[in-house]
Length: 81
Image (cartoon, helix red, strand yellow):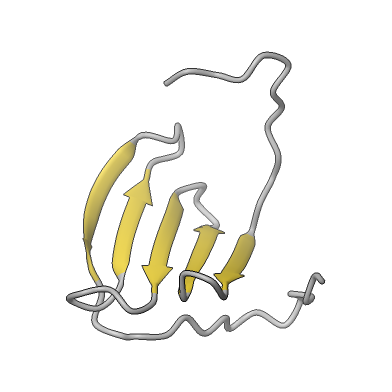
């Protein structure tokens, strides 16, 4: 994987991005064991898409989900304008 010059790593627990123009919602989350997941929700065929990554950022699985919305169970998220 190519790396950005002077790039830095950050610790991310969860990020939800809603794009009103495309109608897509992107949910990025990291599990307590360090694995990552990216979910795409919106008006796309066969429900939403899931992408799973290991602790080193390598893709380890993909698939389609069974629910059509992303609901965050966490209470520490804040809306960013």
